[in-house]
Length: 219
Ligand code: AP5
Ligand code: MG
Image (tube, rainbow, N blue to C red):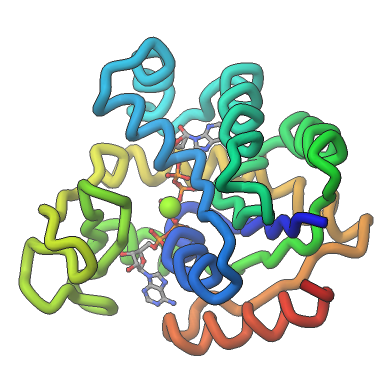
């Protein structure tokens, strides 16, 4: 049976950072809805063009577009063993749709690690973030600097600052998270799937605690 881990947390909590570590550890694919939207944007696909306006304003892309995109991604052969989901679901409607699509794939959500981080820390993290163009590896100028400034440690591609990391967009993203995504904490708590981790600790400590939380659920 495939395994699916859903990483929940506000913008800048460390979902992308930790998803890459978990994906390597468990040999699962990292599926980031934000990364897929950014790839589509770069390739100027119809989906990318439609998503762009929402992303630039810090708003959510409509559920129907997002759900169809994730459904297609999870049905590909490389997700046969499961996936680490990062940034999806983000609304209760997306969570309901995920339960249905994983059922069709012969699986279910196995665990939902929730990386808890307060707003002032998020703002500092996002303003110092540098992202790799090739595959979305993330660095931080203070907390996780690349070995060579401006270059990704893993694939030597150029590092850039995301358009939606501007301070006014960050404020909107945090508000949107609070209004539309935070209800998923209770949604998954009720289903006994939530495993909260204190995300204000260093990257390694958070990683160890996530690993412990995930291993409690037989993978
Ligand atoms: P998305 O790309 O998913 O952005 P996000 O959720 O806002 O999350 P981030 O990627 O900003 O943060 P993260 O938690 O991954 O943190 P990271 O590891 O990089 O979404 C972008 C947009 O796409 C949305 O606004 C929306 O428009 C659209 N979208 C995406 N999914 C959607 C959906 N399902 N429905 C509708 N619309 C959707 O870490 C941040 C920084 O902190 C880095 O610099 C990192 O090095 C550093 N850091 C990480 N951990 C630590 C630590 N423990 N200590 C110190 N520094 C740390
Ligand atoms: Mg991310």
